[in-house]
Amino acid sequence: MSVHDTVPVLSHVANCGEVDLLNTLWLFFFALSVAMTAYHGLWLGDMDSFGRLVQAWFTAAKTSVDISIGLVGIMTLWLGLFKVAEQAGLVRVLGRGLQPLLSRLMPEVPPGHPAFGAVTMNLSANFLGLDNAATPLGLQAMRELQTLNPEPERATKAQALFLVLNASSVTLIPVSIFLYRAQQGAPDPASVFLPILMATSASTIAGLLAICFMHRINLWDRVVLAYTAGFAVLMAAIITLLTRLPAGQMGPMSGAVGNALLVAIIAIFLFTGYGRRQPVYEQFIAGAKEGFQTAIGLIPYLLAMLVAIAGLRESGVMTLALDGIVSGLKLLGWPTEFVPALTTALMKPLSGSGARAMMLETMQTYGVDSFPALVAAIIQGSSETTFYVVAVYYGVVGIKRDRGALVGGLIADVAGAVTAILAAYWFFPPSL
Picture 1 (cartoon, rainbow, N blue to C red):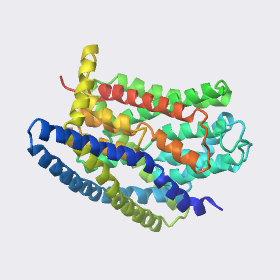
Picture 2: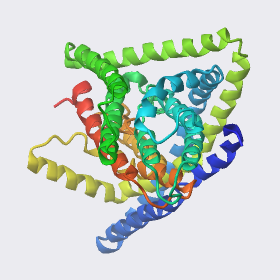
Picture 3: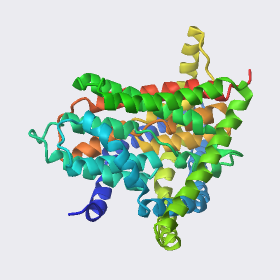
Picture 4: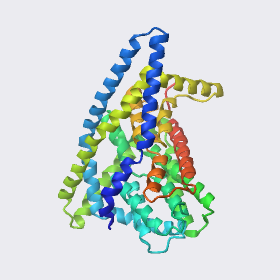
């Protein structure tokens, strides 16, 4: 069976991956909202609290539809462009560039094994922001790696390392974050580009170092060092450039670099496809249709989570929790402007749709270019959903015993979130 033949089956598995977790989490949110509202209404005598809770639910339901409809045009454009990139072979080109590194990090996988192709294609798709293509390719990679597994119910080192790389994968083009910021009215949606690049890089480095330490993988191999040195030089050049700028110019510079990169990438996508005699217009239309369906398909998921989160905020549960965190940080003498974005950080390892809803709720509550919303957007782009990735990718091949992927992924999540907060203070210092 080819990769393309397995896509519908694997996509179905991926879509079901969060169900058990979200059942509990979603009902827990409603239980907290109802309990707190009942306390205000029956114990404190604020009977209007019930009406406010219902109104908050209805408003959030309408908002979720407005958000999804607003995304239709932008998402249709981008998925059309990405379809051209896929058909032009750009993902495969990136994959070939990663193979020398992966052969050192996964020495138990024989050279030329089909697993390398699927792994590199998955990581390349993540790198380009091709989420729809990345998941089926990742699940196929796990199946290929499973053919080399002498203990079918226990993950191999290669599988665990692959999951950490997948969950923390560097994303060069965080298109989904740009889309949501644009839809919410951000004047420069790409202004978070460089902070996200720094956060997702920190996430990947931390996760890779953690899993390599656990598996005693040789990081001093000259090929590994060459890739590491190249990446370090790139990041050092970016940081050196930024340190020469006044603080107020960092955000605009990030936006200028991000927008210039987007223009260059669009041009590369289209002209590479044309140069390879691809029917770029037809491919764009095919991808655009997928984009339309994806945007409309978001409505039920956004509605479910935004309604639950609106209940938490209106009932006072979220305010109570955030006030407690603020009080603790003030006792330590630490800044507190980022605290509202912690809801996204806490949800991120558990649920991708939940974290996305938390980010959107923060944007709507505080403003799309407010400091908490900027931090939430950077955190959202810093890593993938660790528990979801581990559960789905292990589940598709029947693995029951982990080998460090969960720990490595959570380390990556923490590193990404901390770097996101620090980068936000650097690029977008809040006014005092």
